[in-house]
Every structure is written in C-alpha cells, then in structure tokens.
Length: 355
Ligand code: HEC
Ligand code: HEC
Image 1 (cartoon, rainbow, N blue to C red):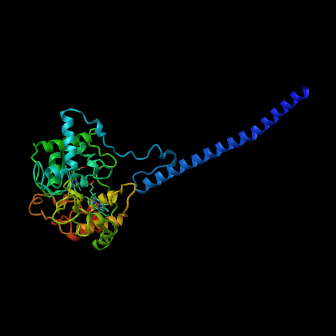
Image 2 (spheres, rainbow, N blue to C red):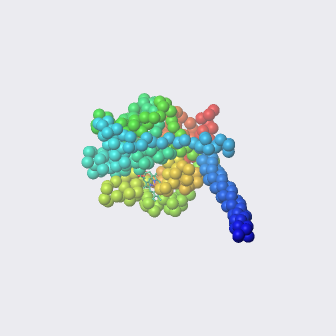
C-alpha cells in the first residue's frame, strides 16, 4: 500500500519536472516572437519616414517622427453631403467635374461648349487627390487677385478660365445651375479649411528647377517609353466610345488644352505629371525622376495645340512684370527670350528677378 502511494507521488513529480522545460521553451518562443514583431514595426516606420523625407514634404527626428508625419488634406466624406436641395446641387457639381463631357462636351446634354475632356482628367478624383491638382485651397483663397487677368477673381471666373483654356471651350453663364453646382461642390470640399489657408497637398507639386533647360528631345524618348501606351504616339489619347469623353485624354492636338491653359506652363505640367503619371503614380510613390518630368513637359508642350493668343488671351497680363517665369509668350519685363521662358534654364531668370 505505502509503496503504491510513493510510486504515484514520484510519477507526479516527474510529470511536473517535464512540464517546466516545456514552459520555459514556450516563454522563450513568445519573447523571440515579440522581438521579431518589434523589429517589423521598426522597419515599416523607417521606410515611411525615408519616403516622405525624400519628397521633402517633411523632415523629422526619429523620436517624434510618428507624431509629425505630414497630415495632408483629406476631402470630406461624400456620404456626409446633406440630403437636401443644397446637397443635390453639391452632388450635381461633383458629377459635372467627373463627367464634364457628357454635359458640356461636343455632344453635351446641357450645352455643346467644350472639348471632350473632363475636369477630372486634370483635377484627379473629382478634385480630391493630394497633389493631384485638387480644389482644397479654392474656397479658402478666392476671391483673390490674379496677375493674369489683373482683377480680383471669383470662383466662377476661375472655373470659366479652365473651360476656355483647359477645355478649349466657352464660359458658362455665371447664373446657370451648372456653374452654381460646381461652385457649391468646391465650397463643400473646402468647408473645413480656414480662410486664407492652403492645406498641405493642395494643388500641384512644386518641383525644384533644373540647372539646365528642359529638353524636348530627351522628353520624347521617355514619352515613348512611359506615356504612349495610353496617350498614344500622336498624343491624341483614346476616346471612350461607350460613355463619351476619353478613356485616355489627349495631350496635344486639336482636342487638347490650348496654349493659354495652366498645363502649358512647364512647371505646372512637370509638377502634375511627377505626382500623378503614369497612371498609378502619387506624390509619395512617383514613377518619374524630376528630370524626366521636366523633359516630358518640354516635349508635350512643344507639340501643336489650339492657339488662343489673339482671342482668349488677348487681355491677359496687363502688368507684364507679373508674368510667372515660365509664361512662354513675350513681351517680358526682363531680357530673356521666349525660348528660355518656355523651357528654362529658369535659374538665371529667378536670379535676375531677385536683384
Ligand atoms: C487640361 C487640364 C485641366 C482641365 C481639364 C481643367 N483644369 Fe482646372 N486647372 C488646371 C491647372 C493646370 C490649374 C492651375 C493649377 C495651379 O496653378 O496650381 C487649374 C486651376 C483650376 C482652379 C483653381 C485652383 C486653385 O487652387 O487656385 C479651379 C477652380 C479649376 N481649375 C476648375 C476647373 C474646372 C471646374 C474644370 C472643368 C470645367 C477644370 N478646372 C478643368 C488644369 C485643368
Ligand atoms: C496607364 C495609362 C496611362 C499612362 C501610361 C499615362 N497616363 Fe496620363 N492619364 C491617364 C488617364 C486615365 C488620365 C485621366 C485621369 C482621370 O480622368 O482620372 C491621364 C491624364 C493625364 C494628363 C492630364 C489630362 C490631359 O490629357 O491633359 C496629363 C498631362 C497626363 N496624363 C500626362 C501623362 C504623361 C506625361 C505620361 C507618361 C509619363 C502619362 N500621362 C502616362 C492614363 C495614363
């Protein structure tokens, strides 16, 4: 009897002894996993900061980096557009930005008054994409004085500028439901931005100027590698035969933006393309070097397009000293040529202006 009891106790003890190393192994395993987990976190965190610093959006000290990563503007959620008359107008405005050609294009249901491009072709994701030429700073900064017209411009005036230049068309009646809808939508997008403020990520990325003139020849080589598959070798794009408008919008030729448009300025084109093209690129994962962006801009903007110097542009720049350095048409307040104002080198022009 006694022996049996002793035996059982012994077995119990041996069992317990066997469990201890098992527990230790388990604990060690957990510890290693935890450490690995930490390592993974650290890696991701470093990649993020490296990426953003690269685009000079933010410079951070490691310890504070997480807290001060750039908070770029984010559009309000469309599900919060009110369900009333005003909301209806906002939604119509958004629709007009996305599918402009269906309403105002060559076969537009409201008016036939522009080429078949959509506002969204250049103001990406209905004017909400960071550095995708978004509208985040419009409601907060207009009305504002602009040198091009030499007047204080309202939002409708600015919208009509794009209609007459970027869409190479006619202006909308300011009192029309379409204009009111576009303005309502732009106001709604910018409703959380403080007056006079320009949020991070607004508009178009500003690229550093090169130390040389941009080269159409170099740009052609890159275009024929990275752009032609969608925009075509002849720059005419690919029409959308089902929905109207374009599957891939034109970059030059009679259906493209005219030579009074914003994209005709090299810095606007280069900055837009760097942060958005080829399709899928973004400001923090660009697919072009700065030089490629400048050179493609030079190539595309040396190809033929509608000329509005004698019509739409005839009242521009009453103050010629107010022309941006990359406005490509004489007369200028400085001694640099049209060629240099169009392609660069821009650095000597900037230096001369500082004197
Ligand atoms: C071919 C390209 C293109 C198309 C199409 C286009 N725009 Fe623009 N738009 C631009 C460029 C470029 C600018 C100037 C951005 C800058 O200088 O930062 C601009 C500027 C604007 C601005 C002022 C933005 C600001 O922050 O000051 C508004 C508003 C605007 N566009 C509205 C429209 C509307 C509405 C449409 C459609 C009817 C339209 N645009 C179509 C290229 C385009
Ligand atoms: C995979 C197809 C694709 C490629 C490749 C591509 N794009 Fe685009 N591009 C688009 C689409 C689609 C739009 C219109 C976006 C929208 O409406 O949302 C666009 C719009 C544009 C616009 C503004 C609208 C216009 O027609 O003026 C420019 C400028 C532009 N692309 C330049 C380029 C350049 C330069 C390259 C080469 C570096 C390039 N794209 C490569 C598909 C492409």
